[in-house]
View 1 (cartoon, rainbow, N blue to C red):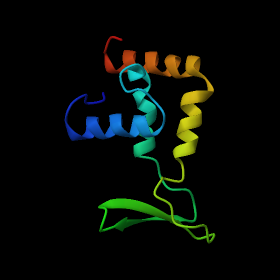
View 2: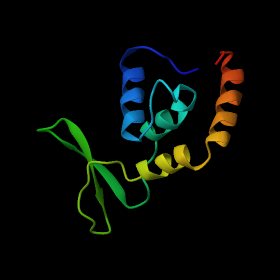
View 3: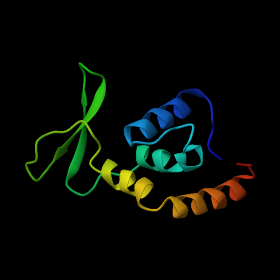
Length: 102
């Protein structure tokens, strides 16, 4: 069950906005933002910390320029945009599994 208060919840909501989601209107789909926050890096990528900004950045072994955005964020944007019906079906299953109501 997703905790809906505290710093972790705030981070999920902020990340949802980064992915183009509305944390209020898309509340049932926030599992996408939560998964994105916890996504592993693709092969050949590593995360470093920018001490001045206190934020992670990402480096590729392929020589791509460093970037602030997690390399898999686009996958989760597409998951959100691709099939809202499938997203709702997953949300309903998750709600039933968590014992919550929409």
